[in-house]
Amino acid sequence: MDYYSSLKSSSDLKYFTVQEKETLLRIGVDRESYTEDLTSFCRKKVLALRSDLENYIDKCPQFQSSFQPLEVLPASAEIIRCMAKAARLANVGPMAAVAGAIAELLGEELSGYCKDIIIENGGDIYLKSRTKRIITIFAGKTPFSNQIGLEIDANEFPLGLCTSSGTIGQGISLGKADAVIIKAKTASLADAVATAAANRIKSTEDLKLAIEFANKIKGVTGVIAIKDSKLAAWGKIKIIKLR
Image 1 (cartoon, rainbow, N blue to C red):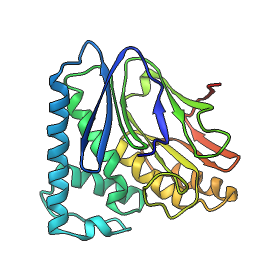
Image 2: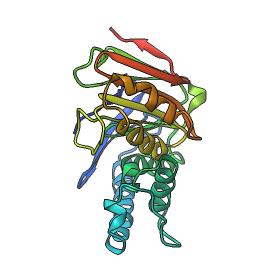
Image 3: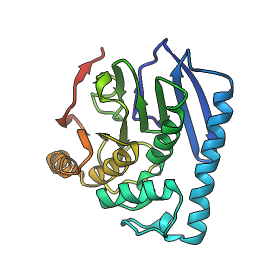
Image 4: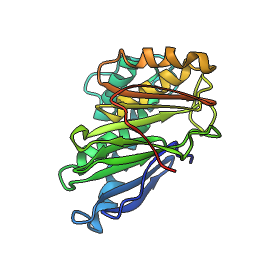
């Protein structure tokens, strides 16, 4: 799995991985909160979330295939409602929010036990922290990859930080962006908007268009869009040089 952005490794966090089918999570929590039971706890939560999703798709196959927002059945599971809401705001299909939704709902569950949390699901991240964090940006073969980072202040957490690309990774994108990174109040929203914004980029001339689309969506707090040697940004974005 390709990672478009990554938390710079911090000695104050204990990292572990959880994998279930296509879902591969890299999880970091503060060391004082970590216990061996957390791995099994997270795995059970991921299994439950995936089960809810798979059961719903069995009943409504279009939920998996649609490229447009969908109304969901009454009393649907939380992950279904979460994905559908984000998709509606971004005007994309609900599966555009699946990775962010899994990270978000697991992160909210862990918040009752851990003080600092990062859950990285491919290019989609849920973050909660008592201190500022730096995210390394990866944008394929562009000159920005691993050279710049996004610094996030402690007072902004919890939040979602998600990336979509049309040139790297296995996710579906209708555009050719090297990376669109969305910072939002929730990871599900960040995931859906990243997909929608990246779909709009075919060349460097489209960066402004993607930024203007994303910044109109309530809950989005920052945007970075990268294509070739060009970068555009909007919102509460603090870019720092790493090397």
